[in-house]
Amino acid sequence: MNAEEEGRTLLAVLAHPDDELLVAGTLLAQRARGDRVVILYLTQGEATDAFGPMEPTEVARRRRALASEAAGILDVEHRFLEFPDGGVTADPTTARAIARVLADLRPDGLVTWGRAWLKGMRHPDHRATGQAAVDALTLARIRSQVAPAEPHRAPCPPFGIRGAHSRLPAVAVDVEPWLDRILELAGFYHDRIGFGDETWLRNRLRSAAEPHGLAWAEVHDAWETRPGVVEALLPAADALQYGHPSRQGPVEEIGPVGRGGSPESAQTSIAGEGRDG
Image (cartoon, rainbow, N blue to C red; front, side, top):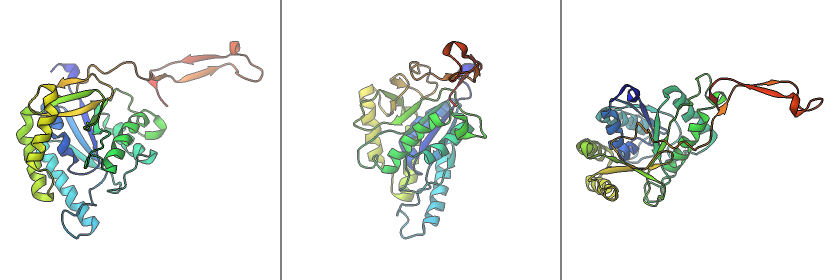
């Protein structure tokens, strides 16, 4: 690893504790490079009935405790927001909350839910989380949305957990080196909440890998990066460069425009680096 590739941060924005099982290999691969990996859960998973009849506050406490243990298995950091389980919406409030985390952590890449339509993956919280997370990438660039934090305007390409019907470019992370630890996490959750059947997970990883000539893979929609097989999502050195340009600023008006003025009498002075707000 050269100096330019050190110190990267990958942020996983997910809806519930246990969602990380579908990106466990991706997170492990990034940590293996020595990079920082953080999971942001939007809810505490309090809607599950995996523990039987129980007050939502106690369910939330247990789910947070499990998430902490899972983070230990993956050797990653984790944080929580407090949106309601089953009630996540892709609205400005949700996107702004995620944007503030982006401004704080300043990640180099983001993995979240993609647009999926199969049972389980199409959970409304999953779809709303993915949309809000992508929206947050723009809001994080706007000073008024994240103040008093500084805007996060560095490149931060998003990757979406790929649904079976996706036609977007795909990036496949080779997770064969991390299979045992992925299955360890699956067993952890299966023993405690009944989710993470090993046969199901093996089939998922194997079927995702086959089109890419791999044995085991996690595949993501590559919205802003080149498709193909990678050892880790970051560095995303081949990020596409023909997206929307950043505004250059600040812009200082010199001379009147409008009443009593003319286009010829108005000039602008542009200084500083790219800005969005």
